[in-house]
Amino acid sequence: MYLLWGRSVDETARANRMSRPSRAGYTATAADGESWGDYMRRSLIARYVDWNWSWNIDSALRYAPVIRFILAAGGADALTCDVGAGTRGGITSYSNLRAVGVDVSYEGEETGRLVRRYPRLWHVCGTARELPFANGTFDFVVCLDTLEHLSEKSRTLVLDELFRIAKDDGTVIVGAPCGVEAHRRDAAMNLLYRKRRGQDHPWLKEHLEHAPLSVAWFEQQVDLTASRRFREYSVIRRGNVSLALSRCLGYLFSTRFPLEQFQRLLLRPVFPILALFNSGACYRRIFVVRGAVGHDQLSVTSEPTDPDSPEKPAQWRKVPCAGSLGRGEGEMPASCQAQVALDYGASEA
Image 1 (spheres, rainbow, N blue to C red):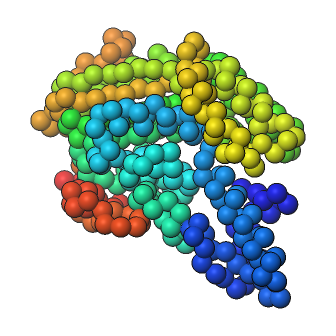
Image 2: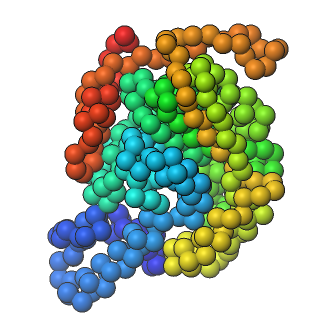
Image 3: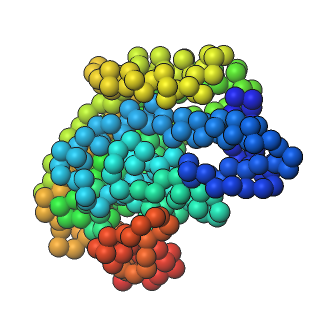
């Protein structure tokens, strides 16, 4: 995240010594001998950068259908978990929802800054392969654009964990870039990024290191995992962001014009129109699985959807209910405090 003159907010903060609190959630600083006018000018620019980067067009497009579904299902006050929420507020940056965010990056002093900046998200440091929550904790479990960063074995583990922490009548919403064309798009965008910056894009590089998700594999694994978790459930399948729009946005952000520095000003007004481009070949597939009845015991077996594959038992982790929830402002719902387990060393029940 860079200012117009090439320094990041964090780099600017480290370069100075006297600090003053700011409304934006980060710490605005003034150097020795700096005039009040210079401080205010720098502080306003830093606040603008913080405001601009808290909204991202790619994240806004992927979260839009998820937020609409949660609100339509009456989930405004429900317990939601955003797995792989990242450092920009996750789903709470694009809605008034309150949620629990899980990410491996939530640790150290940096988390305190994120808590102040995104107070509606409770930050829990953890990995999607082993979520630190009790069975059946959340009404809605959301995981977008995480599976493509993982190996096929890890993807299966993550799907198991997403369904494990959902309630018997809960909803799991999982999405990721799918198909060969989406993989080619990522390769083309990474090549443009390398030509401009001299190095691979950190996230696209991870996409390309692993085999692309196929729509057939994704759908099969979602159905298989859902059948092990729920006796009755429904599935909604939909595309998200047309490949044409995805390529167009990728090329725009790869030009010499620093569009990322003005993306909220320029793209936020046209976002409702861009969000309509979900027909035809799409970059991302989103599955919404809504449970109706859960199994009496989570450790059950079911017939696989692929007749050529061996029967695979569902081995759900059983995390005891203990502890309190992560770092966030305000009081967490008592129901969540009673169900969340943050002790990674807790023995299985």
